[in-house]
Length: 195
Image (cartoon, rainbow, N blue to C red; front, side, top):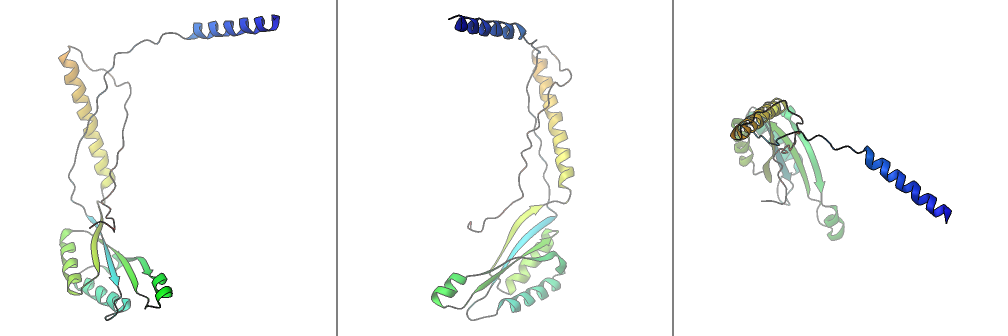
């Protein structure tokens, strides 16, 4: 019994000492605001996905690839910007049904302008390519643009705080806490299954 009483008294003293140490925090007047900003950017990095596919009656992949490279060169495109992205074959159908192996080769082509994009589409349309689509868009100065937009957003938040506090006869002081919600939008990614 003495043991239980001693333990109970020990817990009670611990609780009282913990409660005594918690002081009320001084309340600091504050206002929470958010700011946003936008910037329209014309992309200078346009990535195309070009898909070549073998057909039963027709040209094989190497023939199509050579023609594509010739047409891109004629359009003034630097072939060092053309890379192989994927090389596919339907081996399941080949093994199960003893059909010819139909291969697909995908390329990624980096362009710098809409004018180049237009000339590439015209050239590839002439050779009846299986599929060409814009894979993603970006800009070479994207980090600089992000910094500029974030600066504009924090200025907008400060202006918002100023006019809200002015309405109640107060004014802003030094910022206590700045929180950045960095919701970066990913470049346009095109899904293969979406038309």
